[in-house]
Length: 620
Image (cartoon, rainbow, N blue to C red; front, side, top):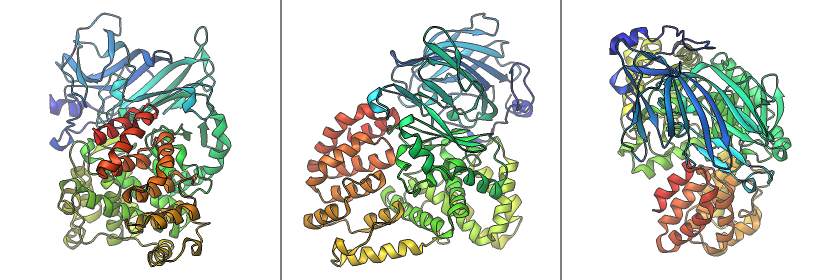
């Protein structure tokens, strides 16, 4: 059945109303097996999801139906879905006839297999509701929003959390188109990562209205995303705009005003943007990531709104995912560098096109810093966690991002930018709307770029980059003149230069990070006090700066920062800016661990379940 299903996987479906694209292929090679999904897509797989759900803000559940269109091999009689704490009422075929189903043993991380005896049915309807503690969903009280008057809901599906509110095959290698009808209270707006068919909603009974959405392209299911809240919209260009709470709208629109330029720059580099609109949703502070590349609607943290556009590289990153990640997707999370490493490289090229070579060099140089940090933290150059092709949950830290992008930058240096750009554009075209593996990418490189050139093959060391730990000797380190000046300031400060002698009034976030992160970790209390008073670090409106400062203060057990540290950890939900602080506090043992636990006890209810689960493990 494996080979037969692969052969028919591109045939169109009759039972998928409104579909524009035929089903995407699946990969059947051993390295494409997804150990984090219970699905057996070579026997039967989901190709389309049709949701009809109501957001219940009092019970904190999504309730309704999911209709799934199925492609099955001849003779297949069942389909296995992924389920995490869904309360299933019944499952029927398209005509309403009940089908037998069962939920297997549950794993704390993966959830459980949901097996449906489909017989001849190729469309099934599941009536269900999510759990109030669904891992993908965060229900915010009005107090946790900018407006303070209305509740808020948002989802975060990557990597395997969407199975907690959508019963489907939750694997990045099983791409699916989808539609949705979402019913919400009249005073709230629903937005999703798809074409918005009813921008103003439609009546849906007393006190409620519904929004309809359609994603014609096949996407990995982790990219189905939802947000509901008191939202306003402002256009940023012909096909770009920003959604956020009204109180945030002016600031967000000013900060993100270059978004249309970024889309234009990305298209000039690697071909057409294929998703229609590119809008941004700026979320409340509890959003756990910098951004999430949900198609047509990037979800973004408010921490990037700093007033100087120095952190809009996050938007360049999420936009770049429209090619690397959304268009061509890692088939399993073992190869997540194919999403993130490509995207960091592409993001940097967008930054260069819009803001200039030195801005891009500054960001690339900081990425190198982060790479060295992660290699050290993973256990050194021989540690397994420093491999690109990693375990089921990916490589250590941000290795996927920074080692992956350094790999691609090294290839660019070896073959020249024009040849490399032509290859990448072709790569995205050849594999559009398909899953990919490390082995598949290397095969493509050899076929379309190396083309039998033995000397080039030897110089690139492809297999060492992909499968071995550490950093190969040919790695390219881009150096920034801007950061070299900061390094001189670090050296002067380390020799005793007073804070008053350093003019940091025009430093970007990146310059601040270089300065704070490169200072020696051991600092006298008087020196720390001088820094905090002179630079206003504990009260900086920039969460990136505060986080880097708190890391330094924690390393020195500097008690005066504790009130500000508690406020920071209680008001920021982005994992990049809080998880290292909890980890550092724990490392400080009898001083830091009680502090971490005390702060976390108060802050945990404000965090997304994804962030809370990570910090739970740190502090257990």
